[in-house]
Length: 62
Image (cartoon, rainbow, N blue to C red):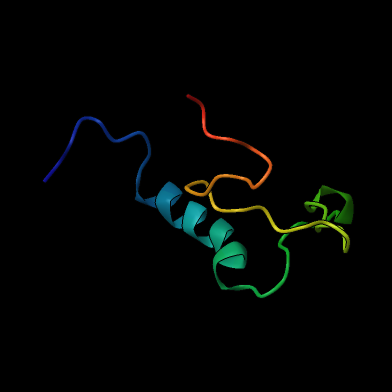
C-alpha cells in the first residue's frame, strides 16, 4: 500500500532507526558531550508531589 503522506523513504527510516539505537538500548547517556546531559537533582531537594495531590502549604480555593 502506497501512501502519499510519506515524508521519507525506507532508507531514511533505517538510518533514523540506527541513530536511535543508543538511546533505546543503552544504559548510559547517549550524548558525546557531557555538558549536554541534564543536571541530576540535588541531594537536598525534596521529591515533587504528584500532580493530583495538593501541597501541604496550599489551601483549597473557595
